[in-house]
Image: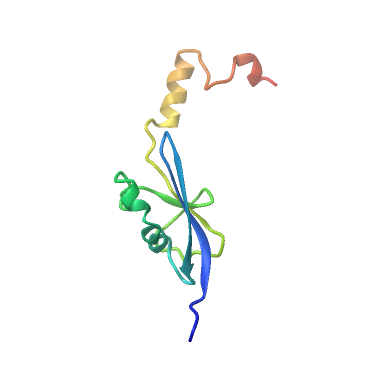
Length: 107
């Protein structure tokens, strides 16, 4: 009997309320898309649309056809609710900062 060689990867998706981590074994040569589909995470979260959601490995954006390595963490990103640059501009116009007090910024 021939054993299929596999690697271990994580598939991760987070909502504002929870983080879901699935550890799976996939064949060597598996792509990010294949791992996501194998993890069944798509059936748990209807809002995930791989044609729209960006995907990364350890916070680095990748294409769905990237071949995974042992130990990779495939992350499915939610769309941003607000443009960070627009938020910073609005806060600056109002004389506010993003969570830090003005005297803390000088340190």
